[in-house]
Length: 384
Image 1 (cartoon, rainbow, N blue to C red):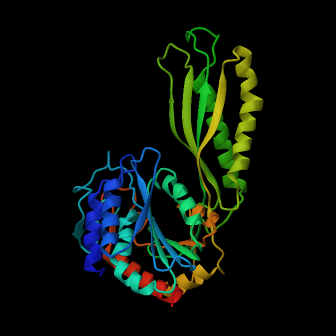
Image 2: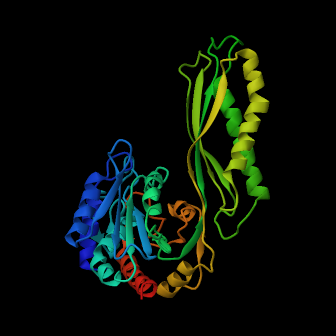
């Protein structure tokens, strides 16, 4: 059973509606107050509108290599989901704790805050850094504005644990995620005439090409059988266009994503799609009107994570958890970004991704207990 203090903190954290479309400042203020009560100074970094913030705090001497423990405060929406109870009220039933974010990933954040008194006693010779971020669910936006603060540290952390829900299994690799938006500008005319450029049909041709590339990747690879699925995937997620059936649509836009294996660059896929547009579609469109066109923009580019099995953070985590193997996951995290900043990173946290983003999300109390035990052992080994 997790400590009573951690459970009380989790109850408070779940009560904050930190859906990514909303502010997380009330939640950050609560976290900051909890740290203040233990005499820990924290620093905030805001989004451009100052409606959201990251929080970063250092326990112990900052002039030594230490440990970074990180997680995001935002959650996914509950609209349209059939919840049996208020999703922002933590409910315990049959050794499970229900509530939005209980698994993804406020359970881990509550454990961190509950262990602060123990962290303070451990961080006498080397620091423990805590990072709480915003907008992970919509492109890992918050952590990117936190990186400069981490890079200004006197000594960067020697290891990082991100507590995404892995059922406390050790994850050393995940796919990258590149989000793109495609906008097609056609030429309006009466649908009875053959004088315009149908933006929806051009968009459909691009989506068909994306599907062909996706099928090629599925059949020919590259492959990494430790991932499920073991290849890079492409999918179109949203599409909008047209005004009326009897008007050739002038505008159509859609969003898509690449989820690339860590060793595969999304730049090559982007170039392939762009080349198809420029060589196969634009000449025909421009023959009708030079005002037509296609823009393909990268909205977010989250790198994959690949931490070598012989990295010290992996050895420490194996000793602390008792696990002898590591895993790879297809969903992305802030880990790839932190790794690019020079911090060896693993993903390990309570709860299952199978419960994340669903109605009646829950985390088992036994998982929270395992997380507490794991973090105690990891810190004791890393900061002897």
